[in-house]
Image (cartoon, rainbow, N blue to C red; front, side, top):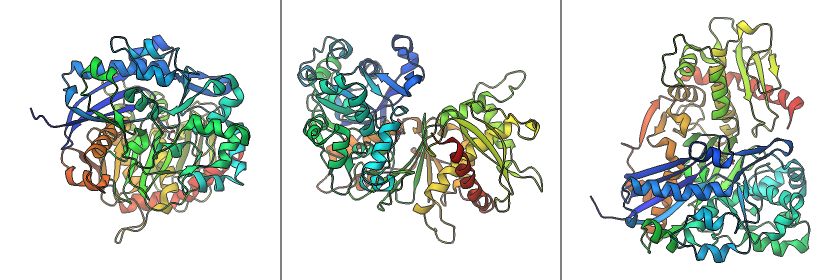
Length: 586
Ligand code: XUL
């Protein structure tokens, strides 16, 4: 076995903590994971990783769960024989926006952890001003969002300054609500971390600064001036007099995405055998880490199909708009990550899957086989014969972010040639997904399987069309589409995304697709530790990365007739959203 350096990447997501270890030539050497529900569900009273306070729209996770998970995932890596002593750099990613509130005991306690005792015992109940971290699915901050959107003049102005208009989950509004709703917590807070910088802090044995990309998920960072936005700090802190205290809680932000924060804390060298010269690079958000999992060129897109669904592009053009996000690129100054983030991703598809008639006798071991069959057996837009209307739908068991609409299911039909004669087929304002109309037989549960996937892809096509341009003779579309996350394993989803979004060079799946964020974290650690003077992440990765063994083509992507068909109904899809929004805004 070679004896070269290894790099460890984490992903602390809603439902799991994953770890992956790579060598300098990008080979995956080891991995391990902790499943929050499976490993700790009963202990922490969580479901799908979170706890919910319906009355206030709060969605949150106990920080203790994360601490437990860190010790367990490292024990699992060790058990698998991972050579911990060869790990020379650690980075990783965390769910974006989620925040941790540390008290004034945190710094000193993190520095002096006893390696014989678990993290949980030494940190939980002692170093936090608040024992919970609001999760990105939290939607308790409508009042604060209204204040943010108004404060700089309009949602567009807020997006111009910070990359995004106000969003429930963005950390600035969460901090503002914490000050109003739990003033004693806000008072007792010495430092605030994001999920990513929390995890970095644990490994560093000191509070780590925010990462230059993840900080743009807060609605507080002024992208052009690379500094906190003074007016937004004032709003969040409740007046100019509160700004110095808030600045102290937030700390300074290094602008280099590859910054080395220090060496790993002695807790980890003694407890798990890390080398004392193992370095900690800034941890970033899970979406920024995803765009580091392969050399992503401008015009390439990543569709990440996890608990949330996201559509990501790397672009030098900063064109903010209230309905999507621009964030600093995690490694490349002057580049941005364009992002669409949908709350109703995998869980919404699961709901449609579970409403499908079960085959008799039940023979499939793959829980998605039935769903995939339904998608493949249904024609695009469920047009079975000449004269059929095209079907369009919105399936949101949870209140959605894109567009900002309450939970519900809406089904429409329109003319296939040009999207005209758009009319409502039925609607269900609860989270039910069964048609309520008497014409049920005309819109089958099998049609829903295809229409939900088309709907997710149509929404991405609608909102990303301004960022792509013609490629040769082909109409404007992404060059390649890479699928990552749990849903990327599903061939029916790959087909539909290719049909709707195109992809001049095809649709690809990352081989370690379920681990893309952790892998991006490991690559980030490698780049931070091994880069030569001025060597960009893309240069370094481009030299070492090979397609073979890393990605697989799963669909041809652009197909002329399908691409045109979906393009023809895109205006109707937009109009359907407009009509739904006019009655069902969050
Ligand atoms: C992005 C977002 C989600 C989380 C998922 O804005 O809220 O994608 O990052 O962990």
